[in-house]
Image 1 (cartoon, rainbow, N blue to C red):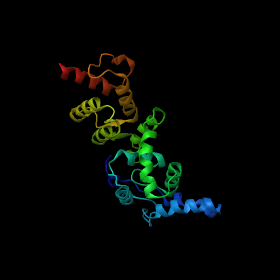
Image 2: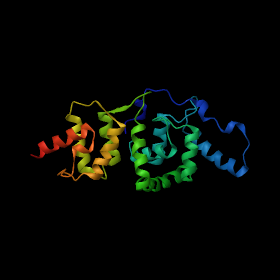
Image 3: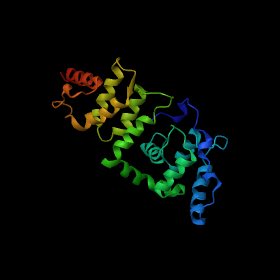
Image 4: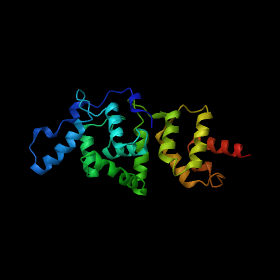
Length: 226
């Protein structure tokens, strides 16, 4: 995943992250929320009212996880992050409550379980789609550049489909027809990896309305294999 600091859009409006409109809450609930909120404050940019790219790097350091590790992307999915490289207080509360954590040691222990959750069939497709949307860093952006897509393929699917990912990345880097990939193409990459025999591609049928980029990829593969 590319460094979040590369994004050009403004951070989320800090007005969206204010707590509960000043309404009183039960003591136990408030105590738990206080721990979560204090942890948020230790990483947040106080002038913006959000955790920004610098805060996320600090969080990664405290968790002992590189900012490019897939578990950080999974954490962003769990909190429902709307903007790459930024966590609002509401998102932070949502994620930490769902993970039942309120300290760094607890969060560190929760990450392997989060990875297991994401890798269940019921959750993975949602995470896979999120990983694409998370890279849409500009307003009204519909596609993600090829370099970022290659990084994302490697990060999200590389461990499951190493041979397919390596071949598709090789093709994407040498082709000149596409500067970026849209969500439909991204979704069909995963479908292709799941359904098509590789590397012989014998069950690929272009008549099944695959995106043209995959027709071209299959043609390139067949020429390459001889």
